[in-house]
Image (cartoon, rainbow, N blue to C red):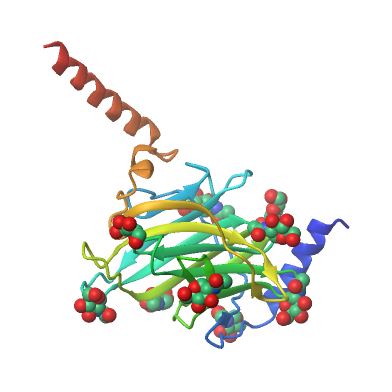
Length: 238
Ligand SMILES: *[C@@H]1O[C@H](CO)[C@@H](O)[C@H](O)[C@H]1NC(C)=O
Ligand SMILES: *[C@@H]1O[C@H](CO)[C@@H](O)[C@H](O)[C@H]1NC(C)=O
Ligand SMILES: *[C@@H]1O[C@H](CO)[C@@H](O)[C@H](O)[C@H]1NC(C)=O
Ligand SMILES: *[C@@H]1O[C@H](CO)[C@@H](O)[C@H](O)[C@H]1NC(C)=O
Ligand SMILES: *[C@@H]1O[C@H](CO)[C@@H](O)[C@H](O)[C@H]1NC(C)=O
Ligand SMILES: *[C@@H]1O[C@H](CO)[C@@H](O)[C@H](O)[C@H]1NC(C)=O
Ligand SMILES: *[C@@H]1O[C@H](CO)[C@@H](O)[C@H](O)[C@H]1NC(C)=O
Ligand SMILES: *[C@@H]1O[C@H](CO)[C@@H](O)[C@H](O)[C@H]1NC(C)=O
Ligand SMILES: *[C@@H]1O[C@H](CO)[C@@H](O)[C@H](O)[C@H]1NC(C)=O
């Protein structure tokens, strides 16, 4: 029996153990079928990923997050529905901040440790020195699945409020990975992608995602692009 298979067996056994609610810093979640896809990116959900346009269901490495805002009620903040997927034998993380070079970031961490399979932690990154500390931000409805080094998780973050002048739901987002240390500790955070300021309530606020179609919409969007291009050309010729 190879290591990968052993891991799957461990994971399935982990499934049978009832989930334990967090102590504030730490939450375990039951393994469930989490199926994170690009479906709806740019239309129904805001997607960020690295490498660009990578497929979270594919066989190649893809660090991916999608965000849907629910119950938008500025200035009281919004609830976020987050999907996060990546390859790591430690953790993957999504960060939200007003400015990645000053202040702090909210960080949501989905992690695995070979003996407990999956756990979730929320943390704060000090943007000046890139250190992270665990926080007690409430996160709900955590679901997860771990298969080898592929971690997938979904969760809700209630009442998110940015303090930027522009909008209470405008954030710079980042995707990161890191190691799990000493059992369930969080090692240094390695940021792999930092977005521009994005309005989380607008699935298409990430231009790279809107211009790059999903498989299903590709032909329609491409022909639209061709039409736009043609009309621009026509305009210039006339
Ligand atoms: C995990 O599953 C058990 C049994 O179905 C359930 O009682 C528990 O609330 C679940 N835990 C989490 C964190 O979802
Ligand atoms: C995952 O979701 C997509 C779209 O929602 C669906 O087409 C696909 O069959 C699902 N895959 C699995 C393994 O559930
Ligand atoms: C959100 O932030 C704005 C401006 O910083 C503030 O007026 C408002 O009270 C905040 N809402 C909550 C729920 O913290
Ligand atoms: C972010 O912070 C840096 C350093 O404080 C500042 O120079 C920059 O203008 C800020 N960026 C935004 C978009 O506010
Ligand atoms: C990072 O900055 C914070 C706040 O300024 C400080 O408390 C912490 O000790 C610093 N950490 C390191 C490793 O410099
Ligand atoms: C885990 O990943 C392997 C390799 O990609 C795949 O063959 C297998 O079906 C996956 N297992 C589950 C439970 O999804
Ligand atoms: C958690 O899930 C339940 C059931 O799907 C939903 O009613 C509730 O609003 C969710 N919580 C948050 C904070 O989104
Ligand atoms: C994880 O730890 C290994 C070995 O200590 C190190 O080589 C690697 O760079 C670390 N990975 C991250 C993402 O920090
Ligand atoms: C996983 O966490 C458990 C509980 O804290 C710990 O005993 C174990 O050593 C950890 N496993 C690894 C591989 O870090």
